[in-house]
Length: 493
Ligand code: HEC
Ligand code: HEC
Ligand code: HEC
Ligand code: HEC
Ligand code: HEC
Ligand code: HEC
Ligand code: HEC
Ligand code: HEC
Ligand code: HEC
Image 1 (tube, rainbow, N blue to C red):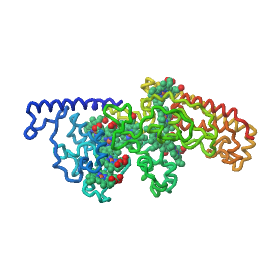
Image 2 (cartoon, rainbow, N blue to C red):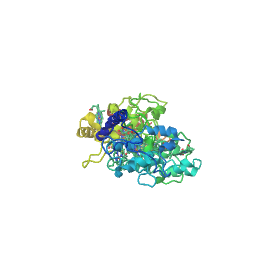
Image 3 (cartoon, rainbow, N blue to C red):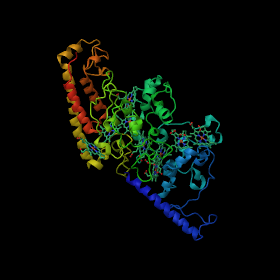
Image 4 (cartoon, rainbow, N blue to C red):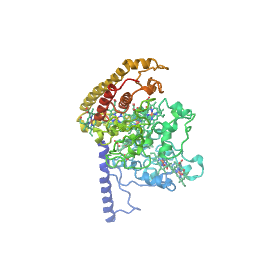
């Protein structure tokens, strides 16, 4: 996927093997005596072994080996990540002593007590614990002093120090996304100590981290008194495990892993069961939050929540337990074969090209037509298809609204609706929350099933469809059925 990265990683096994052979040959010939022979020169491309030592450590930074004495599990995991090899990566391309690079590929470079070179501060090579947790010498020597323990910090700033700039603008791109901040409507609720348990698992990084990742019981008022800026959105470590390879990306570039927290679920049998439709274990990373909530077509007070993308993708719609007759037949998407599902279109990545183009990190999560090329031939073709389907589906959803309006304009509905108190502020077929009739027996209670089905489908499409692209055939059939339901709906009695 990222040609220049692949190039470097493909390189690695060969250069290591060559080095091992070379060292072996020299040793056999009796030419390699550690005490007298200077180590091979490390200036070249294929990396000799530079001299190593720790005489330069001051005790401020101590290095991961020291942390492993007490945090051995985390240390073992971390050893498997590319972070631990970040200095080797530079050395393989002959940049192991370039001061322009070391700041993000070692611990504390440029800071007192930080990395200087392999000869004097070898224990601080690579991206380590202390890059993310801060200098740990004081803590390691006084483990019982709680004040000196590193504070856990799930902010994107931790990663943004390095994952930034034109080569890898993950941080800047993420900042432009809606994931970067808690929704403005929810900030005051969380600040007032409410709604965290019902909305936080998708809308609050703080809650997600503690309740979902750590499994803690989190009180509703855990964010009380905080400002929006002090609340974590969907930050890097909500999606990425900071410590470990997880094996969750099927098509990563050579040697890479991305450390994603959730596996790709290739296929899940579509369900109409409301509990299962909200069960995150059925879905991929994005589907942990982009799944439907507790609403079905018989509900009157509110339209479906705008988060049902993964259900649409798998072609499913939850039904009320009281009426399990499907209102749209389940049908998985033609896009089910996208190699990385949502990420194929929403986390498209392209490497930096010197002097021509900055890198695309995909972390704005906006759709990029580059992701469509493997199947649709070119960005232009894909854009044309997208435009085509947008026009078609806008028209189809318009037909549903026309049918709903026509029902509301019939004499029986006009009489009923104008007599309502309180008077609806929106169309008489709408949900209460959208200005429709009040949610009582004489209001919503009078609306026939066909209208309820049609309006539910209309919102399901608007919210979850990605303009219909998430599951074109399913959404097409859904909108055709919605129009029929509305056209065939009887008058209020
Ligand atoms: C001699 C043992 C020891 C060493 C060495 C040590 N730690 Fe700790 N660390 C602890 C103990 C004990 C705690 C508190 C109990 C706990 O949370 O695990 C702790 C807590 C932490 C926490 C907070 C965990 C939490 O859940 O709040 C972090 C982060 C941490 N250590 C990182 C490090 C890093 C980084 C290093 C190396 C620079 C390091 N530790 C070295 C023993 C040690
Ligand atoms: C000190 C700089 C630095 C910090 C801080 C940092 N990274 Fe990295 N990260 C790197 C470098 C450098 C690499 C590339 C290592 C290599 O390929 O040798 C990397 C690689 C990665 C990769 C790719 C791993 C793979 O197998 O494909 C992920 C994912 C990642 N970092 C996530 C994070 C997250 C999440 C955080 C914050 C919790 C973070 N990083 C903090 C410098 C940093
Ligand atoms: C601002 C911090 C930063 C600086 C400075 C920096 N790097 Fe990196 N480097 C990173 C991060 C972060 C990654 C991981 C990129 C990713 O996986 O998205 C990385 C990855 C790499 C990789 C792995 C291949 C790739 O592109 O993913 C190479 C090679 C590399 N850097 C070389 C260099 C060189 C050479 C320099 C100095 C000229 C340098 N870096 C300076 C942060 C930095
Ligand atoms: C790329 C950044 C990064 C690196 C490298 C890193 N950590 Fe962490 N660590 C975090 C973040 C962020 C958290 C809090 C989120 C979490 O637990 O996933 C955390 C959590 C922890 C915790 C407490 C919770 C837990 O998961 O056990 C400990 C202890 C810890 N780290 C120790 C270490 C040690 C020791 C190392 C080095 C061997 C290390 N970390 C390397 C970012 C990092
Ligand atoms: C299952 C996960 C989930 C839960 C639980 C959840 N939301 Fe959402 N919500 C989302 C997602 C995902 C989006 C973004 C959808 C989009 O923009 O397409 C969203 C969007 C929103 C929006 C912005 C769009 C709009 O309609 O204006 C608001 C406001 C909102 N949610 C409020 C809430 C409130 C209030 C709660 C709790 C009562 C809640 N959400 C619970 C996942 C969830
Ligand atoms: C909503 C989930 C999500 C969030 C939040 C997120 N990422 Fe990612 N990230 C992904 C996915 C998915 C991929 C893999 C894309 C693919 O399959 O090609 C990825 C890939 C990466 C990679 C490896 C590919 C590359 O770009 O070189 C790095 C590094 C990375 N993310 C860093 C970050 C950092 C830093 C942040 C925070 C500023 C962050 N991510 C926030 C989902 C997320
Ligand atoms: C931990 C929950 C969570 C995860 C995981 C998550 N998202 Fe989101 N996402 C949200 C929430 C909440 C919003 C809406 C925030 C708002 O409107 O304020 C959102 C918004 C979005 C938006 C913007 C929608 C709009 O209306 O502009 C896109 C696109 C998106 N997410 C895609 C993804 C993709 C792709 C993934 C997986 C790589 C993913 N999300 C993973 C919670 C999540
Ligand atoms: C085949 C490509 C493709 C795949 C796969 C895909 N999307 Fe989309 N998505 C789109 C397009 C196209 C749009 C409309 C973008 C626009 O109008 O700018 C969109 C829109 C969205 C939106 C914005 C809200 C909306 O309804 O318009 C969210 C959120 C979203 N997708 C999440 C997801 C999630 C979660 C997945 C995985 C279950 C996913 N997408 C899979 C192409 C895709
Ligand atoms: C894994 C392959 C794959 C990827 C990637 C992919 N598509 Fe498709 N797409 C298909 C297939 C197969 C069909 C069904 C045959 C057709 O209509 O071309 C399709 C159909 C469509 C349709 C037409 C549906 C209809 O019935 O009219 C649109 C629109 C579309 N794709 C847009 C996109 C966009 C936009 C992207 C990228 C953001 C994308 N696709 C990425 C395979 C893919």
